[in-house]
Image (cartoon, rainbow, N blue to C red; front, side, top):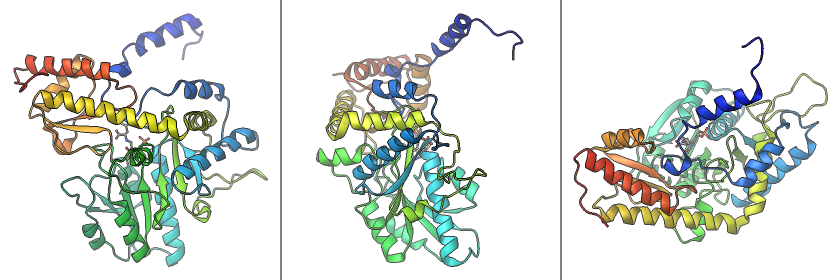
Length: 395
Ligand code: 0PR
């Protein structure tokens, strides 16, 4: 650290010159996150001094966190569920599996060997960190041709060490949604804890279903679902860090309960202690301001824009590897890696799943508007031409 600080202008200008290297949202087609809603930015800024780790000070902020939890709980079919706003999907999933492990330990009077959790091979890669931290052995079920968990195969993995099942609604890799209704039946039949990771799909599926999309239920209306992750900082249009965890039964949440060493302070129910109240305020603000209809329109726009992207790609002879369920398009392209690298040199960010290294993965989110799609398709044509790859046609 410098002995004498720099003038404010110098600090700001060095930040600005680094930030200019960040790729503008209008060239980003790989991100599940998006430019936050302007109200979220405003409210987050206003809540910068808040800390939900001390709700004796931030009583009002805590009240708004509770209201945000109830609003999202209602969206998940149970307004009275227990929950917290957390730093993101990783923390939310960690808390769910922590609870599942504690519950199994309590019920079984201790665990005889390493606990096991059953998940599909498409479960989010961040869950591996949680398995490592909690000493869980993953039991991985295969997926079908539509990249959804094979529930029969999952059932065959159940044994006396199983402490939970995870279903994903849906994956950020392909946008595929596991058959959560079947998983719920399995959880009820075998008395298993079912956690649903809806970090990506939680703010899409309820609205997409109303728009007539054939997506399954994934929420507390299914009796086997014990907990749900759902991230405002993905399709919820809130800034990072805004994740959320929900438990069907408050008794489950109370298994995460850490006393502080100060008298008369409430217990902590999240992994973070000191945590940003601004994110809770921003989540509350966006939910209240947009309401159901606002999210329905945002979802409709994303699906319309995705259809437009697909139409433009198909007109060029490109084909899709799997029919999209959420707003993620997987496009066959044998030279995908070279195309992605060249586009990145031109400041276009797209991605490739290692599972399908001959496909481009394109994510449609609020910032991916028609003009962005038009510019992207032109850049893709340019990259294909530069690499001497034939595009089968033009629209
Ligand atoms: N579960 C699912 C289903 C997810 O999609 C993600 C993140 C997580 C858990 C972990 O959530 P946090 O990252 O909030 O802890 N999925 C995004 C993805 O895989 C993460 C991401 C977001 C990566 C934006 C890049 C990016 O630009 O795409």
